[in-house]
Image (tube, rainbow over all chains, first blue to last red; front, side, top):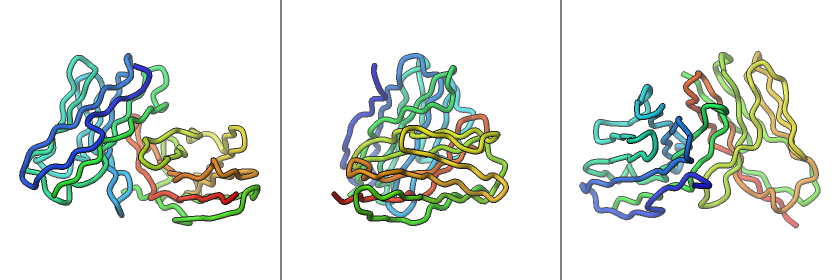
Length: 114
Length: 112
């Protein structure tokens, strides 16, 4: 596609439920990143994928958070047993191997845990 | 641990004014530094990327400088326009994985 696509754009969930957030990177972009943007916290790195491998998952805040990437393309960020502090905008970015720092960001998924 | 700080947090200026946004970082061992723009409800758009060996980058009315030794970068916007109104984020790349450490951003309003 022309850009990085994230779905859903908005998600409201009840505390304790599991959620899945999806990111479709630009075709051919081997690197994929998840970031979280919270009020008062700014943008925080969560996890980095190169192909289907995640060499850096140091930003995942707890074991309730997990992510996978399949076929070197789509990635899913899963949050189990959601808590109110998980409310944030989750942003995905991808980059090409020929321009590794030329990130394209998606518009994000706004997650609200009630 | 790398920390990135942006000052001011918010800025309001009349159209046509030249302005400077500031970014500081605590660890000078950086890979690169980028300035992004974020419009409400949107993702981030990369404005300028400065490699660690460079001192500045220019694109149109934007100029970004980097002083690694003092841990500072500035984004200069010339002849500001209402369309420049957005949040500007500074981000440091600290390794070759591409991971970015972001500042909290400066929200700019340019009044017609």
